Image 1: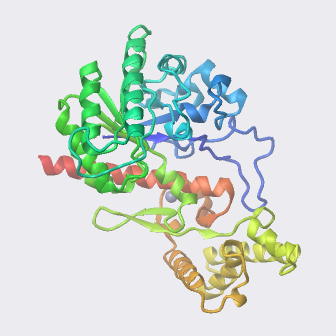
Image 2: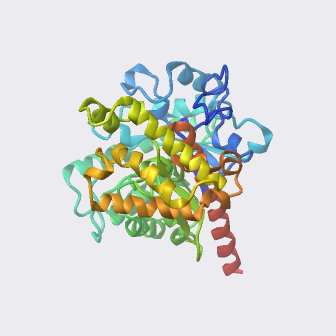
Length: 434
Ligand SMILES: [Zn+2]
């Protein structure tokens, strides 16, 4: 089972100065920055996925993407592998998957991309694998049989996805055939997804991609995978698109998933309320720590609001921010105790996250929760228990929930832990089969 990392320009400045909060002198964004496989010195994944919606470009689509116009142009010119800096021979075995990023256009009547221009996008970008242009079905009903239960809109989107897959396969046959086409499955129940899969195999696909799993719970995804596998030949490969429940991967090993893509280990570093820093846990599970929020005072809306209301002066905020940072660094060096550090950090993190001063919120549960989580993080010092280059180089900075250079580094650390976790699970499963 291959883990494909869904990239969204997730790189960091290798020369970032944490004490002065500055980028390296003369740093050119993107060019001098490091993708996870550069920051770690090896790829913690077996491939990368790029969504067409993230690249953007092509005025007709109306989707602006995340790449700058110059980046989108360069992507098309040099191809995905060179753009992602995977051209080095040691990365030659990595796959490069493409999909349309259907969530970005879920409100549209029809996908803004045709099967023809989608195939062209993959061909120009020299992808190794490309998914047909699908249209998300949001409804999900357990326990239906066959094609029953779909609303007219569900059926309409099902039909669009199937028709696009058929046209896409035809177009790719006339291309230089550099990429392997994947037919995307969309449905409103495990049974309708199984039917979609069966039809895609009948069209001639031997690699399918299950879409629309993002809002689903792990047991629901399992029901879909099981129903699909039962409906298709064992030789047909299956990819799970946007597998948000990637941390439940141990349940999915041996269930006939060839590959999956996710951005979850990286994104949880700064999008999850509690689980921001991964470590290997006990019994084959992952364990998680909460990163400590020390946002930049001048960029935090809650703090700015307090300053506007006159509760705190701008200078006070900057002092509290500096105190929190220096207290955490002293704690890391063994020069400050736990209690003092937690108090200094909370004095700043509470107004930044809850929007009021600690003394104005006596007995608040939110504060008690935050205190407990920060105490656990500081007491256990997880950053000293990881051997990845990020933690070794940056020490406690990786634990701070503070702007992109720290947050994405923590995300890259999570990719390191996640890839080791996956490797262990696969070895265990292979061992069990022997
Ligand atoms: Zn680490």
